[in-house]
Image (cartoon, rainbow, N blue to C red; front, side, top):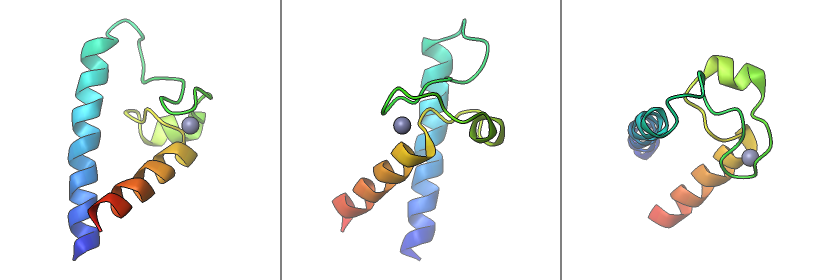
Length: 72
Ligand SMILES: [Zn+2]
C-alpha cells in the first residue's frame, strides 16, 4: 500500500511542478526540453508520453529513489 501512496504523492507533485512550469515559462511553447536535473535534453519519446516531464528518466529515477529513502 505504501507504493500506492507514493505514486499518488508523486502524481500530485508532478501536477504541481507542471503548473509551476507553465506559470514560469509561458513562452516556451512546449514542455521543458532540457532536464532540470542534469541539463541534458529530455528524450522526445519521454516528453511525448509525459509532456509535463521536466527531468530525464535517469534524474527522475534518482529523485524518486531519494524521496523513498527520505521517508523510510
Ligand atoms: Zn537528467
